[in-house]
Amino acid sequence: MKILHTADIHLREYGDERWEALQKLVDIGKKEKIGIFVISGDLFDKDIDAENLRPKIREIFSKSGFKVILVPGNHDKDSYKSGMYFGEDTIILTESPFEYENIRIVGMPYEDVEKEDVLNRLRSLKCLLTSDKKNILVFHGELLDAFFSRKDFGEEGEGRYMPVKLSYFKDLNIDYVLAGHFHSSFDVRLLENGGYFIYPGSPVSITKKETGRRKVNIFEIGEPPKEYPLDTYHFEEVVVKLDPFKNEQPLEIIEKCMKELHPKAKAILIVKGFINGKQILLNETELVSQIKEVTKDKCLEARYEFKDIQIILEDDIFKRFTKKLEQAGYEEQKMEQMLNIAIKAMMEARL
Image (cartoon, rainbow, N blue to C red; front, side, top):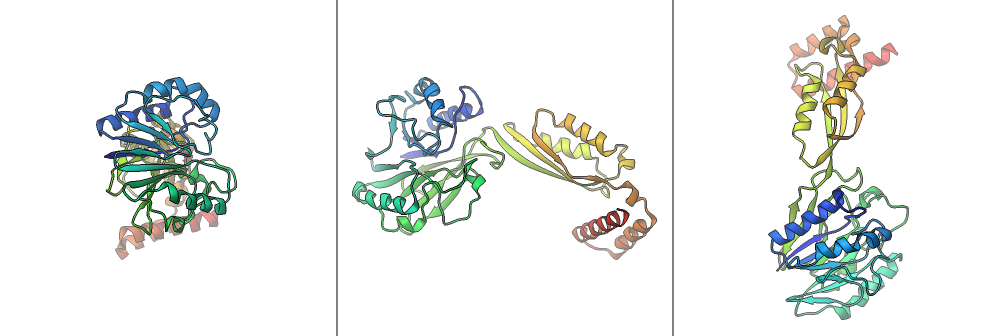
């Protein structure tokens, strides 16, 4: 049986990019003929969003051809009150395990507790696990074994969110920990018993830290987790380094980068390096204005860190230095490093 695993969609409005990502996941589930769709917390951004969107959620989750497993996360921990209906094939996993064919799925919803309490909760799961089926834990919280920055978990405040270590699972017969809360990227860790701890990352960019094409985890029971790339809204960091010594037009370089963007991507553009304003017939202000025009509707934000160094490039001392470098026959990377050092030194000397 095949399972699709995601987390941290943070739904807010019907029809926006996040909703489109959810619809895309449902469509992928149908196409891939999955048996279960697991969302490991934070389906909703806030509890009020769950209240407003529940009628539409019922539509999208009903008659899909697969079961939908939801576990509360720290953003939507109060969204699944007793008796609330989210669709005929939807299971809210809190206390009771869910069995389906050859698997047993146990939920560990988010709670505001310390790691000692989390460890005790994990130990209490022993009686819920079985030896004759594959055991899956759906979990929403932080893995402490690897370094993640605060921003990797979204725009959270201080403190830990259901912290665990891989060693906590050592004596538990768990084959897969399908986790949520880590936004940035797809991440898999091996458990000591041979199982897997998986963060799929958010399926749509929520913050500017979540760059690159988004992914979900689609895998066959008994097989390793598998990345499945998505065509969903995301941010892409685009770094352009301008070099006045190369026969390239800055605008042409940036236009090419924009054309190569994924259709669903928005660029976080960073323009570095140097220009020769006299050579390209543009000063810094004019170049920025033209960059804004060619990146219109494709750019989320831009940082302009380049400098016009035409005065230095036309300096006789710099020209003699450049000529000697060329005669020395250095490799391109070494040549670039030495030119940058010379440029910076001459800029400081002029200050």
